[in-house]
Amino acid sequence: MVDLENKKRLTVSLQGDSLEWVDMMIEKHRFHNYQHAIDYCLAKVYEEEFARYKHINVYEDHATIYDELRSELVNVYFKENAWCEKCETQDCDHIRYSLSLPKIVEPLMKKGWIIVDGKVIKSITSEGF
Ligand SMILES: [Zn+2]
Image: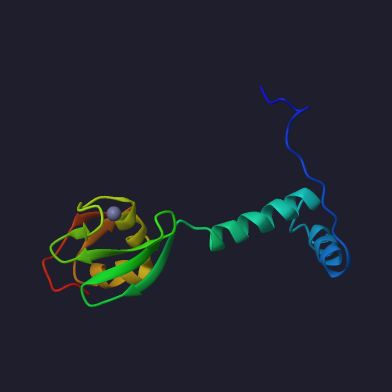
């Protein structure tokens, strides 16, 4: 049961253009209320700025992603199958993240790979992309 007495809470104030914008969005039914507007905006920023993985680049035979939690670059290879250099496996979060990116999935599927929900169902041996 949630202890409402001790639940952490912070009151903030909106003013000027920010308040006018939120008022307008509520009027247009974009947000239900002020709390909804703030929750929505925070979730968007969190999603974009604090995502665990960031896509860095696609090379001839691999993709490089940045793992925010470990603060390191991770290479994921696509040769005979998907292969994570860091985890030394064919199935990990780095691979699942890589296989959620159209920039990576689309060229592989054009070559005949079958990828469903971030998992390689069928791979085609090739030199990568
Ligand atoms: Zn991995």
